[in-house]
Length: 148
Image (cartoon, rainbow, N blue to C red; front, side, top):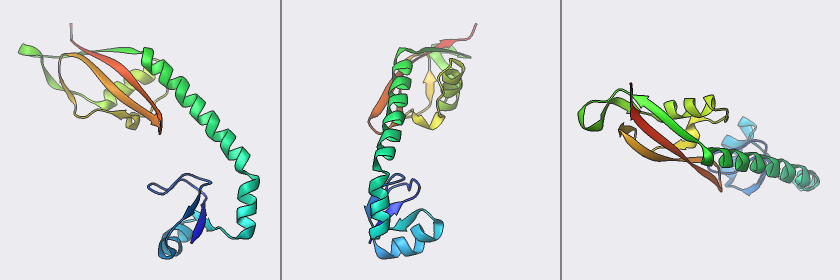
């Protein structure tokens, strides 16, 4: 069954996408939650008319993400922390702390865009991957230094 998504659906697609889904999935989940409408002849014609508007919005969002990625690539963060002997931290540096520092530097960023494999538990320089949207990624340099 063909449907047109009215909002983003994780694992399926973005708002405005025309998708082929199983009948039960559409009837039992997509239609009752208002996430999609049946792609009949009239809806498809309407979808075609609004394609340019959707594509323009997607280009604007991608341009914003690329500008943010450029800002993040130039950013170098320094995080002072309490550390013991041999450079081991009391606690860890998490993505939440890094996101707070990025936001304080003037770049608006959700902490879920940061991808730390595991929390940082030692002193040193680290690279943190940031995935802003599919196809737009950046790397932030983070230096963990002893406090004081």
